Length: 238
Image (cartoon, rainbow, N blue to C red; front, top):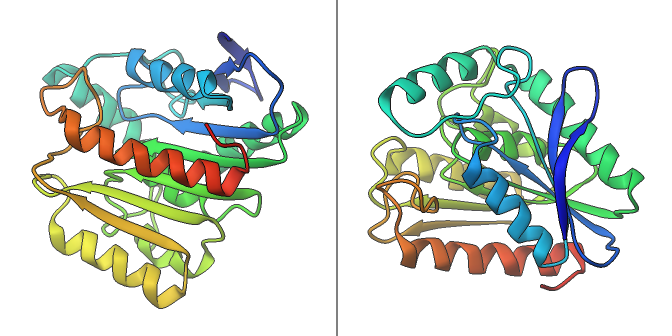
Protein backbone atom coordinates (compact mmCIF):
# COMPACT_ATOMS: atom_id res chain seq x y z
CA UNK A 1 0.00 0.00 0.00
CA UNK A 2 1.22 3.52 -0.83
CA UNK A 3 -0.12 6.88 0.35
CA UNK A 4 0.73 10.48 -0.54
CA UNK A 5 -0.75 13.88 -1.30
CA UNK A 6 -2.01 14.55 -4.82
CA UNK A 7 -3.22 17.71 -6.54
CA UNK A 8 -6.80 17.51 -7.77
CA UNK A 9 -8.27 20.76 -9.11
CA UNK A 10 -7.06 24.30 -8.49
CA UNK A 11 -5.95 24.59 -4.87
CA UNK A 12 -7.67 21.32 -3.88
CA UNK A 13 -5.35 18.59 -2.64
CA UNK A 14 -6.22 15.12 -1.40
CA UNK A 15 -4.42 12.52 0.66
CA UNK A 16 -4.67 9.37 -1.45
CA UNK A 17 -3.97 5.80 -0.36
CA UNK A 18 -3.60 3.00 -2.91
CA UNK A 19 -4.24 -0.65 -2.01
CA UNK A 20 -1.73 -3.35 -2.91
CA UNK A 21 -3.91 -4.70 -5.71
CA UNK A 22 -5.94 -2.88 -8.36
CA UNK A 23 -9.52 -2.24 -7.30
CA UNK A 24 -12.77 -1.03 -8.78
CA UNK A 25 -14.02 0.31 -5.45
CA UNK A 26 -13.19 3.78 -4.12
CA UNK A 27 -13.89 5.68 -0.90
CA UNK A 28 -13.84 9.42 -0.19
CA UNK A 29 -12.93 10.14 3.46
CA UNK A 30 -14.29 13.45 4.74
CA UNK A 31 -12.54 15.36 7.50
CA UNK A 32 -13.62 16.86 10.78
CA UNK A 33 -12.96 20.55 11.45
CA UNK A 34 -9.39 19.62 12.36
CA UNK A 35 -8.34 19.16 8.75
CA UNK A 36 -6.85 16.12 7.05
CA UNK A 37 -4.91 15.39 10.22
CA UNK A 38 -3.25 12.22 11.49
CA UNK A 39 -6.57 10.60 12.40
CA UNK A 40 -8.11 11.18 8.96
CA UNK A 41 -4.94 10.04 7.22
CA UNK A 42 -4.95 6.89 9.36
CA UNK A 43 -8.56 6.12 8.42
CA UNK A 44 -7.63 6.66 4.77
CA UNK A 45 -4.69 4.26 4.87
CA UNK A 46 -6.58 1.64 6.87
CA UNK A 47 -9.38 1.56 4.30
CA UNK A 48 -6.77 1.22 1.55
CA UNK A 49 -5.20 -1.70 3.40
CA UNK A 50 -8.59 -3.39 3.14
CA UNK A 51 -8.59 -3.07 -0.64
CA UNK A 52 -10.25 0.29 -1.36
CA UNK A 53 -8.66 3.13 -3.31
CA UNK A 54 -9.16 5.99 -0.87
CA UNK A 55 -8.82 9.78 -0.93
CA UNK A 56 -9.36 12.47 1.72
CA UNK A 57 -9.80 15.96 0.23
CA UNK A 58 -8.80 19.14 2.05
CA UNK A 59 -12.23 20.73 2.42
CA UNK A 60 -10.66 23.88 3.89
CA UNK A 61 -8.34 24.48 0.94
CA UNK A 62 -9.98 27.80 0.07
CA UNK A 63 -9.25 29.41 3.43
CA UNK A 64 -6.73 27.12 5.11
CA UNK A 65 -4.66 24.98 2.72
CA UNK A 66 -2.66 22.43 4.65
CA UNK A 67 -4.76 22.94 7.79
CA UNK A 68 -3.89 20.15 10.24
CA UNK A 69 -4.45 20.56 13.98
CA UNK A 70 -5.17 18.65 17.16
CA UNK A 71 -8.13 18.80 19.51
CA UNK A 72 -7.39 21.61 21.97
CA UNK A 73 -9.71 24.60 22.40
CA UNK A 74 -7.65 26.87 20.15
CA UNK A 75 -7.73 24.29 17.35
CA UNK A 76 -11.50 23.90 17.74
CA UNK A 77 -11.98 27.67 17.40
CA UNK A 78 -9.74 27.85 14.33
CA UNK A 79 -11.43 24.85 12.73
CA UNK A 80 -14.86 26.36 13.28
CA UNK A 81 -13.71 29.56 11.58
CA UNK A 82 -12.75 27.62 8.45
CA UNK A 83 -15.96 25.56 8.66
CA UNK A 84 -18.07 28.72 8.61
CA UNK A 85 -16.39 29.77 5.35
CA UNK A 86 -17.44 26.55 3.59
CA UNK A 87 -20.48 26.26 1.33
CA UNK A 88 -22.46 23.20 0.33
CA UNK A 89 -21.79 23.92 -3.34
CA UNK A 90 -18.06 24.22 -2.74
CA UNK A 91 -17.93 21.00 -0.74
CA UNK A 92 -19.89 19.13 -3.39
CA UNK A 93 -17.50 20.42 -6.05
CA UNK A 94 -14.56 19.11 -4.02
CA UNK A 95 -16.18 15.72 -3.45
CA UNK A 96 -17.12 15.50 -7.14
CA UNK A 97 -13.47 16.13 -8.05
CA UNK A 98 -12.52 13.19 -5.82
CA UNK A 99 -15.18 10.98 -7.40
CA UNK A 100 -13.89 11.87 -10.86
CA UNK A 101 -10.33 11.07 -9.80
CA UNK A 102 -11.44 7.69 -8.46
CA UNK A 103 -13.26 6.96 -11.70
CA UNK A 104 -10.14 7.95 -13.64
CA UNK A 105 -8.20 5.37 -11.62
CA UNK A 106 -10.64 2.64 -12.64
CA UNK A 107 -13.12 2.70 -9.75
CA UNK A 108 -16.61 1.83 -10.91
CA UNK A 109 -18.35 2.38 -7.57
CA UNK A 110 -17.64 5.00 -4.93
CA UNK A 111 -18.72 5.57 -1.32
CA UNK A 112 -17.96 8.24 1.25
CA UNK A 113 -17.18 8.10 4.97
CA UNK A 114 -17.26 11.31 6.99
CA UNK A 115 -16.80 12.44 10.57
CA UNK A 116 -18.66 15.31 12.31
CA UNK A 117 -18.32 18.20 9.82
CA UNK A 118 -17.30 15.52 7.33
CA UNK A 119 -20.39 13.53 8.30
CA UNK A 120 -22.45 16.53 7.22
CA UNK A 121 -20.39 16.60 4.01
CA UNK A 122 -21.11 12.89 3.50
CA UNK A 123 -24.84 13.62 3.78
CA UNK A 124 -24.45 16.21 1.03
CA UNK A 125 -22.41 13.71 -0.99
CA UNK A 126 -25.36 11.35 -0.91
CA UNK A 127 -27.12 13.62 -3.41
CA UNK A 128 -24.44 12.99 -6.05
CA UNK A 129 -25.47 10.59 -8.83
CA UNK A 130 -22.23 8.55 -8.65
CA UNK A 131 -22.25 7.97 -4.88
CA UNK A 132 -23.31 4.42 -3.99
CA UNK A 133 -23.24 4.72 -0.21
CA UNK A 134 -22.41 7.21 2.55
CA UNK A 135 -21.45 6.54 6.16
CA UNK A 136 -21.91 9.55 8.43
CA UNK A 137 -20.21 9.43 11.82
CA UNK A 138 -21.91 11.96 14.14
CA UNK A 139 -22.69 14.31 11.26
CA UNK A 140 -23.13 17.70 12.89
CA UNK A 141 -25.80 20.27 12.12
CA UNK A 142 -27.66 18.35 9.40
CA UNK A 143 -31.00 19.23 10.98
CA UNK A 144 -30.05 22.82 11.81
CA UNK A 145 -28.21 24.48 8.92
CA UNK A 146 -26.66 24.14 5.49
CA UNK A 147 -23.07 25.30 4.85
CA UNK A 148 -23.23 28.61 3.04
CA UNK A 149 -26.90 29.18 3.86
CA UNK A 150 -30.31 27.90 2.80
CA UNK A 151 -32.63 25.32 4.28
CA UNK A 152 -31.07 22.87 6.74
CA UNK A 153 -29.41 19.99 4.90
CA UNK A 154 -32.00 17.54 6.26
CA UNK A 155 -34.35 19.03 3.65
CA UNK A 156 -32.22 17.35 0.97
CA UNK A 157 -33.39 13.88 2.05
CA UNK A 158 -35.65 13.46 -1.02
CA UNK A 159 -32.59 14.12 -3.24
CA UNK A 160 -30.41 11.45 -1.65
CA UNK A 161 -29.43 8.74 -4.13
CA UNK A 162 -26.93 6.83 -2.01
CA UNK A 163 -27.62 4.28 0.69
CA UNK A 164 -27.12 6.14 3.97
CA UNK A 165 -25.64 4.88 7.24
CA UNK A 166 -26.04 7.36 10.10
CA UNK A 167 -23.98 6.71 13.24
CA UNK A 168 -24.54 8.72 16.42
CA UNK A 169 -23.53 8.54 20.06
CA UNK A 170 -26.26 8.23 22.67
CA UNK A 171 -24.46 10.78 24.87
CA UNK A 172 -23.46 13.25 22.15
CA UNK A 173 -23.79 16.71 23.71
CA UNK A 174 -23.50 18.44 20.32
CA UNK A 175 -26.23 16.51 18.46
CA UNK A 176 -29.45 16.15 20.48
CA UNK A 177 -31.56 13.01 20.22
CA UNK A 178 -34.38 15.10 18.73
CA UNK A 179 -32.17 15.99 15.76
CA UNK A 180 -31.23 12.34 15.23
CA UNK A 181 -34.93 11.47 15.22
CA UNK A 182 -35.62 14.31 12.77
CA UNK A 183 -33.03 12.88 10.39
CA UNK A 184 -34.38 9.35 10.77
CA UNK A 185 -37.91 10.54 10.00
CA UNK A 186 -36.74 12.52 6.96
CA UNK A 187 -34.95 9.46 5.56
CA UNK A 188 -37.98 7.26 6.15
CA UNK A 189 -40.43 9.72 4.58
CA UNK A 190 -38.17 10.13 1.53
CA UNK A 191 -37.90 6.37 1.08
CA UNK A 192 -34.11 6.43 1.24
CA UNK A 193 -32.33 3.13 1.83
CA UNK A 194 -30.87 3.92 5.21
CA UNK A 195 -29.98 2.90 8.74
CA UNK A 196 -29.77 5.20 11.77
CA UNK A 197 -27.91 3.90 14.81
CA UNK A 198 -27.63 5.46 18.26
CA UNK A 199 -24.65 3.82 19.97
CA UNK A 200 -25.09 3.30 23.70
CA UNK A 201 -22.73 5.16 26.01
CA UNK A 202 -20.92 6.98 23.20
CA UNK A 203 -20.33 10.71 23.02
CA UNK A 204 -19.29 13.02 20.20
CA UNK A 205 -16.12 11.93 18.44
CA UNK A 206 -16.38 8.38 19.76
CA UNK A 207 -14.58 6.86 16.75
CA UNK A 208 -11.36 8.90 17.07
CA UNK A 209 -8.77 7.26 19.31
CA UNK A 210 -6.88 10.56 19.63
CA UNK A 211 -9.77 12.19 21.51
CA UNK A 212 -10.84 11.87 25.14
CA UNK A 213 -14.32 10.90 23.95
CA UNK A 214 -13.01 7.77 22.19
CA UNK A 215 -15.19 4.75 22.92
CA UNK A 216 -13.53 1.59 21.63
CA UNK A 217 -16.64 -0.58 21.81
CA UNK A 218 -18.87 1.95 20.02
CA UNK A 219 -16.16 2.62 17.43
CA UNK A 220 -15.74 -1.07 16.68
CA UNK A 221 -19.49 -1.62 16.39
CA UNK A 222 -19.83 1.38 14.09
CA UNK A 223 -16.95 0.30 11.86
CA UNK A 224 -18.40 -3.18 11.51
CA UNK A 225 -21.53 -1.56 10.11
CA UNK A 226 -19.43 0.58 7.76
CA UNK A 227 -17.44 -2.43 6.52
CA UNK A 228 -20.67 -4.29 5.79
CA UNK A 229 -22.06 -1.26 3.93
CA UNK A 230 -18.95 -0.92 1.78
CA UNK A 231 -18.82 -4.62 1.01
CA UNK A 232 -22.48 -4.72 0.00
CA UNK A 233 -22.60 -1.51 -2.02
CA UNK A 234 -19.16 -1.44 -3.64
CA UNK A 235 -18.98 -5.13 -4.42
CA UNK A 236 -15.52 -5.41 -2.88
CA UNK A 237 -15.65 -7.23 0.45
CA UNK A 238 -12.81 -6.51 2.90
